Length: 217
Image (cartoon, rainbow, N blue to C red; front, side, top):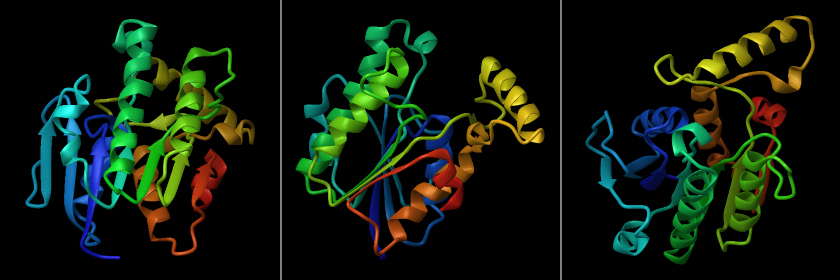
């Protein structure tokens, strides 16, 4: 497994930033190609960054070629401004990119979803995450890996105020041996596990990783 090309969307977010930093240091990859709406803050000899319009995927579809697509794109309702815009970012952009990658012969797909993802959920966020999980599962990739983490420990400059509060509460209960299934997951660990599953030569075609199984990888 060498000389691989990794494709990444969501590279400017917390998980995506860490993932790109790890990929460019991973000697299995000779090319890392990023598709984003704004410039990256990192450069490297094997890193190619394309600033794209996700509302016009046909303009850059021909560039979505490689060995594996990592999808870590996500937003919040506050950042998006409306449920319609959040749906576009968390579902439409990701599904269109995944479908393009599959059509272009990309063999493997790794998606950051969310704990509780369920297409039938009454919660908007977990519902759209579940809808995306179901939709990409039907695409003709040779391998699909879906990660469903809970609270993410982001970089200090990216962590959100309510996340700080939530993480502090979870840490408190964890010390009492409670809510261990909600244990916060550092984004660098998540990125490491996303890369690790691709080196598993006996991996199943479709796998979903809950928080516990992510830590156990």
